[in-house]
Length: 184
Image 1 (tube, helix red, strand yellow):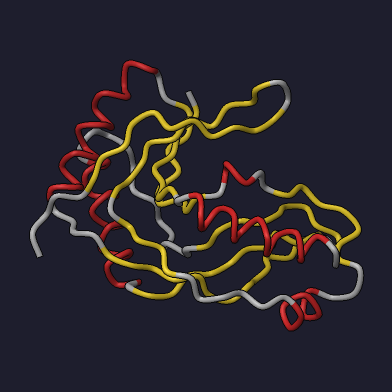
Image 2 (tube, rainbow, N blue to C red):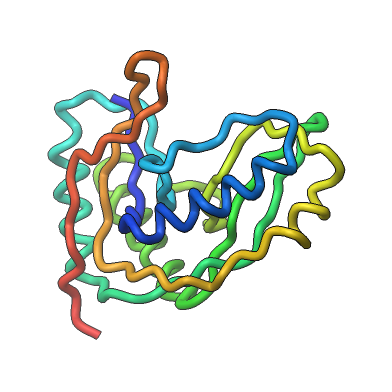
């Protein structure tokens, strides 16, 4: 199983992201655009694991949620990672980023206790809209013409997701979700 821990979004946020994505698409020749149902915020990519390891990851997630209270994020500016004339187009986040960072480090710590090595790089929170994009003019043109509203995202749980190809389509399947129950 190929898995990761994420923050899932409600339908309202997913629909809004799809609207923004459709605007972005009009400025592009081609690209691999994320499917609406796959929009999420990755907190920690874990990778391939044996299904027997899932229970320990779930227990680590349980320990994380005991230490965390809910918080709000908000959609931020659009950005791009460029490589070889192709872009990965994303939307950044604002809001309670210190709480998001605390969540990330708590996940790292609890996963390391079960033998999953910590990431060496810091969290760079973003929501991927599209990969391998070829833009018509410039990414800067997209950034100035496509306005992203600062919609609030309520964060009150984390989700263990499986990444699987079904009929050739990348699909993220929720395996386990745990709500926050920590005290402020």
